Amino acid sequence: MAVATSKLAGRIGWIDAARALGACAIVVLHVFVSTGLNVELNTHRQVAYAVAGIVGCRWAVPAFFMLTGHLMLDPSRDVTAASALRHAKRMLLAIAVFGTAFACMEEVWVRVSSGVPIEPSIALVILADVLTMRTWDHLWFVYAMVGVYLAVPLLRLLQERLGDVGFARLTMALFVLVLVVPTLLGGFPMAGPISSFLGNTAIGITCCCLGGCLRKWELTPAWIAAGVGSAIIMVMVSIGGIGTGRGDQGFVFLQGSCFASAYAIMLLLFLRRFVGDGALPAESPVNDLARDSFGIYLIHPLFIHVFFIVMSAPPMVPVLYEASLAAAVLTASVVATRALRRIPLLMHVL
Image (cartoon, rainbow, N blue to C red; front, side):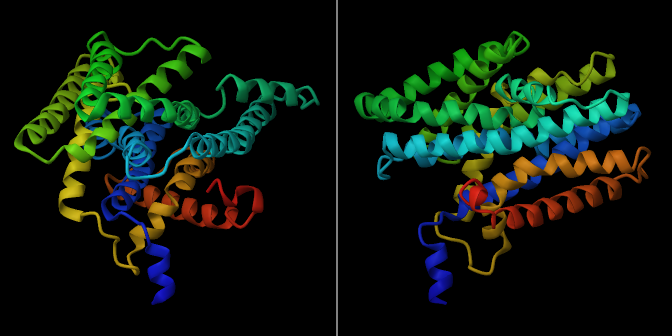
């Protein structure tokens, strides 16, 4: 019992719940997205994926940024420039290991599929892919987290100098400038690797600041209205785009959407209200899933890719197909994360 208690020391129940749910949401979301890319879907299924993805999944990425801000911008925590730099180095190591591995898989697969011989020069192509963020798409989050962690010392300084009210005003200004305006204009312009990195980092920093303000906010009717209203807007705009042949209108629900962030805030406030700050029971699987969440995020696309290589025409039984694939991918990702954590180099990454 003492060992279990020591493992839970300092754990925050609602944050662990958010991490665990967020990891599951990301897996389900990428099952939807990958299925849509690999299988011709009818309109009904496209709408179902859009609604389920928005309501159940799209909150997760903004929420992960916000959870970082909630912890790193907590005045009661001893967060130094050195500790923020250690977190940034962890992200860089994740990029170096997993970004390189995924870029290598991609480049080798492309050459093997097209009958092009693999030559030593492929190493330079892989390196260029990693340096220019052309490895697997989901790693944009990890690249952005490097910038977020490097910005934490400045954000804490501003928080101290401006006070709670001043920092909240700064956060709202960032929210309008980085999230609201681009969403209303149809999305943040991200044409190349530099603009993508800067845009995603700005989004991450803004959500980080929102997370820093969370401790002063409560689950009020106003937040519920903002969250529910944002979900309705995202769903209606996306369905409208699908119905008129213009696509799912990703700008309204992707990471740069002000509506996705407002919805994420409502859900996090809900979790804090009903789960609370205390550590979850030691036997709860949520604790382990929360600890594995970053590894799940990094690794899960590999298993989805393998599935579609093996199953070019999967059995599309509604709900059963999506639930089974998501459960299998989540399980495989957890097993892989815990196995890779035994490797000294990856011990502190995963």
